[in-house]
Structures are given as C-alpha cells and as structure tokens.
Image 1 (cartoon, helix red, strand yellow):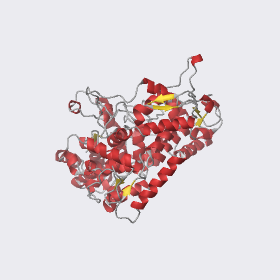
Image 2 (cartoon, rainbow, N blue to C red):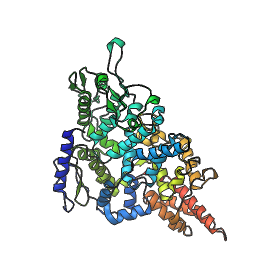
Image 3 (spheres, helix red, strand yellow):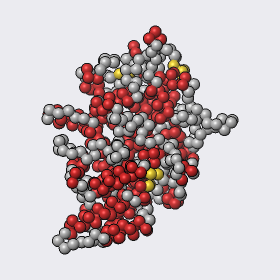
Amino acid sequence: MTRARRAALAAGALALAACAGEDAPSAVAPAGAPPAPSVADTPSAADASRFLMQATFGPTQSDIDELVSIGYSAWMRRQFNASSESNVSEIRRIQADYAARGDTVEAEALADIAWRDMIDGEDQLRQRMVFALSQIFVVSYENSDVAETLASAAFYMDVLEKNAFGNHRDLIEDVTYSPSMAQFLTYLNNRKEDPSENRVPDENYAREIMQLFTIGLVELNPDGSPRLDGSGNTIETYDNTDITGLAKVFTGLSWADGDFGGRFADRTVPVAFYSPLAIFEEEHSTSEKAFLNVTIPANTPAAQSIDIALDALFNHPNAAPFFARQMIQRFVTSNPSPQYVRNVAAAYETGFYQLPDGQAVGSLQRGDMRAVIAAVLLDDEARLPASRTDPNFGKVREPVIRFTHWARVADLNSASVLGEGNLDGQRALEETAPPTSLGQQAYRSPSVFNFYRPGYVAPGLETGDLGLVAPELQIVTTASVTSYANFMMDRIEEADALQTYRPGYSRELSLADNPPALVDRLNLVMTAGAMEPTTRDAIIAAVNGVPLRAGSEPQDRRRRVNAAMLMTVLSPEYYTQR
C-alpha cells in the first residue's frame, strides 16, 4: 500500500470515529451514502436463523440465541473484531509434523485447514467472506504448480482473510503480488517483450483481472444494469489492445529469493513461498503501456506501473456495481433488484454504512469491505419479510454451504472429521470436488471461472424463461443431486466406511421422543422456518415410523434423528435460501 493510501485510510478512519464513536448514538452519513436499514435491530429466532444462513456457514442454536440477544449491529461489530489464525503457520506446522515422520505433506492439508475454518471457525462472517472472495479471485490447487507449493497456497488464503474486512484496492494489490495467483494465471516469471525473439508478455492475468476480478465485460450503470449505446447494444469495457497494453504491466514478477525464473525444485529460500512476489526491474517492460484510456509513460518503474494500473481498475465506474452484485449473489440472492445493487455500490463508493442501531461501519474510503458486507446483509431487500414471498428472490444453496451447515448443527468433532492426529487415517473430506462426491470444494475449482458463473442462465427451466440467472444451478444435475444425497446419507447415517467422526446431535437426541418438537427444531435451525406444512408432516410421519424399542432406545433415538435430518437436508426448503 502506498504512503498516500495509508494516510488517506487513516484520515477516513479518524473522521468516521469522530462522527460515530463508541458512545455516539448515530453517525452522519456522507453524500451518496446508501439508505439506513429500516429493520429492527433485534430479530426473532426465525429472522436470526435466516440472517445467519446468509452471513455464516449455517446457524446453530447457540448462534441464533446470541443474535437474538445482542442484535444485528452488535453481532456485526463482534464479527468484524473476531481474531483469525495464520494459515501459513498452520501449514508449516503440518509440514513439520509430516517431516518428523519422514513423510511429505500433500494438498489434502489445505482441505483440512479450509474445512476446519468453515465448520469450527468463530470468525464465521470472515470465513464466509473468504469463501465468497475465493470464488471471485479464484486460485485452485487443481493446478499442479499451486498444489506443489502449499505454503504459497496457504499464503493466498491468508491474503483473502487479511483483506476480507479491509479495502478492495488492497485486496486487488495483494492478490496481484501473490505467488499462487501468479502460478495459477501464468504471470510468474513473466518477461518483457522482445521483438527480436518474437516474445510478448503473458496476457492471462491482464485479461482475467479485468473480466473477472474488477470491471467485467460490459459497461455498467451504478445499479448494475448494462449501459447501452445509441443502438441499444451493450458497450464493451475493453478490447484486445487494452489486454496487450495491460499485460506489459505485469512483467518482472517472480519469487522473492533473488532469482528470476528457474525451476521451483531448485528454490532454496523457503520464506519466498509465503512472501509477496518480488520485482525484477530488468525483466519489467520499459515501453509505454496504454489501456482503458490510461497511459503509463515509457521507463516508469514496475511498482509505480502496477500501482497506476490497479488504481485505474479500482476507480473504474464499473468496479463498485460489478463487485456489489457478485457479493449480493454469493450471500443473499441471485437476482438482486437494481436498487439493491445501487445501495451496496453506494456503500462501496462512500466507505460507509449505518447499522440498525444508528452507529456506522466503514472508513469513509472507497472500497471499504466492512461497509460493503454490512450493506449486503442488512439492506431492506435482504431483511424485510416481503422478500421471502417474492418468487424472484433467493438462491440455490451451493453444496459446500449445505454440508457445512449440517456439520455445524450436528456438532461434529472437527479433529476426527479432518483426520488431524491420525495422519495415516481416513480423511473423509479430502476430495469432495468431483460431481460423484459433494460436487464442490474450497480452492479446488476446475478453472478460473469458479464452479459456476455469476451470469449463468439455466436452459430449459422456468428461471431461464423468466430471464433470471441461477449461478449454482450450473453444477446441479441429475447425477449431482443423487451424489449429494448419497454423500449426506453416508455421513448422517455414519456409514462403516466413514467411521472418522460421529455427530453429536445432543439437542436433537433430547427431542427424539417428541417427533413434532424435533422437526420444529430442524425447521428453525436448518430452514429458518421455511419448511412447508407438507414437508413437516412427511418428516414427522417418517420419524414416528421408527419405533422406540425396549432396550434399544439410545440407538432408536439416533435413528429417528438421522431420519429427520436426512429428509431435512434433502428437502427443497433446505436446497434453497429465501
């Protein structure tokens, strides 16, 4: 971060503190700020569960009780202040454990860390932000180079955690200087052009940082709708000349060990694997670089060139609505209204959002991530009950979210789930990305385009006929639905092949003698009260069909809970988030 940016952020933070201090009853909204939410600060249990489905990896009863007790505003502040642990430190500890056994750790260790953070992390909002950001700024260890450098992949995870509540501009910069991103999008050791050798800079990152990370393919209005030209056609944000000009910016970056190029296997400075990329000025293009109506003069130093380029992308009119819409899609609904997008984009632009209790979050600087996520989760469209009956509102819950929600409610012992402490043992969650398994896994996307695209329209379905996007439906097929059912059944029913954990179910087991009460509890914590009467009745009937036999009551109670839970996680009310 440049000295000027640090000073500006510090000044913004002080200004916000002055108008919305710890004891201040309200905050003064800057010009252009989004409207304050009209929702009451203290939710009902069902409203709390619904909010937590959007904001976390799934509510537990204790999470619901806490939110009802303290309210949305205090919960947001508590989550913003929650601590997180270094993934680099964790992966190095695991590598040391393996080395002590004369073994080499492989990529499943990254899966262990990610699952543990999602299921057991106290900083649930940060972890949901990290998961959302990982699906926009995609790095995947399906790529063999990324998988080979585990410390670099862990460093990338730390980059997302560090910036989840920071500033979008800093996130873009830290992603750019990340070794794993440079490996994944092939600009590691990217050399300046040389006409004598017919060599041009690699264009991969230049293309994707525009298309996927910052501004998108077409020009947008502040509400996220496409801008149109005089003939009613969309306007492209960039063309191939912009890509070739921007590609020259991302030259001269390599491992921070003083050696440009060379093989990974020959690297002898381990700290380079979990450090930002270094600039090798002699390999950076010295020619003029022109893109997006910006011109970087010839012989501009590499660091300055990169700053100018990232500033241009960050300050582009598309940046706020493009990022706002994707964040809404990841947390709340696939088809937000233009006003919802405009409100979140305004939080991005002003770095300000007023919470329901009258206090505010944000640094008053463009791109403030706390203001953005607060606007996403607390906007009236997200919170007011009318949205639940709007047929265009909501989203398909992706497989990772469905599984982690169940795991959190089931009160799993994460150490045994993840295989920690039994390094030769089964790792039940080691590889869930294939469609024959869960069909998704953090940091294992098949490409830079994630498991699904934000603009995906399902062909031949009613959503498509209505012109609605349904991103998660891109990975919903007949085969994946069956695989998900089998995946969940094996874990809920504790199949013999997966005896690496045992769900606790303490609250559920205490209600097993009372099927209506058991199902009502699952209705609250698993579907936020959205279960249809027919679904509820069917599950109660199934639970009643499991008799409590004399002498086998403990086993039969668990069978009742298993039946109720399996039917719940396979229900349409659980598949969708409204």
